[in-house]
Image (cartoon, rainbow, N blue to C red; front, side, top):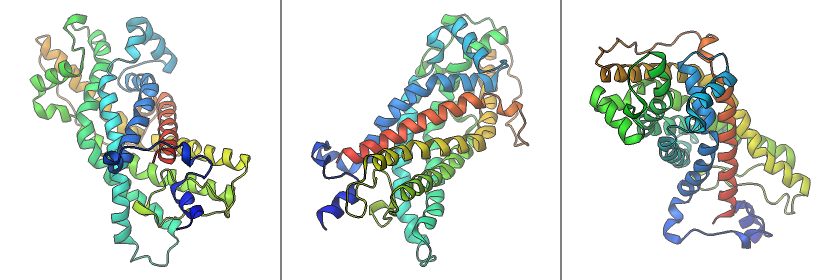
Length: 354
């Protein structure tokens, strides 16, 4: 393999490859998992306040995002916006890392199954169904791990609001304050299966988001890069994925400063568009899940107060209305922000760490 070809394959040009860092050899097989976890830790922390506002608006009546924000700051302070961040810092970061790894590993498997059937198909177009299937599998598998953690996050985000709105008698020091206390309360009153309350909607949501996001992200990014350079991405690389495979050589020559800038911008643009689209599509499912889990939290507090549980509907799909999209704006901003930061960070790390 020539030096130019090797540089192109690695997505790192000759001018900066010597500045790249390298993982220890024993960690090399886990490169994509480690780097995606690192990128997710940053994006999750930045986007968490918006996630908190989104959940509160889905499960309670507020006049709008600003009203929810000011009310939360007044009643709970700045800590209220970060209440429950411990669970997603662990689960979301690990879930993203696991999801990207499963997605990357599934693509060559699905490619080997599908490609013989569509031997004469364009590789760029064939990437869409391959990414769709791999993304759906990744989202579904990850939801098995993530569901209990997301329930504990929602529990902590809304428990104070639920306690006040229903005029329950629990004092602040009687409410669960961390992941372990919340998990203990859930299993005590709902059993171990209580940690998977709303799982049906959770797995549908995650599989839908992943199945749509990955192919859109890759197609948009690759399309933008092709329009900038006129050079197609080689899909015959190992694991049939494009993470960190930025175009560093154009017809054997260094891209111009403008082309480098546009190539860099193509990543956040792809993440932004894909995130906004999947958010709108999956948001009704997320709302049904959050409302069901809110009712579970309410019943737990009722029992703690010596009251009987209320019957809970498992939720059913219905034509989306304005009400079911309540909290969409902060959710779109949060999703766009976290995905742009995550994938930009992941692509940069994949291209600069050997």
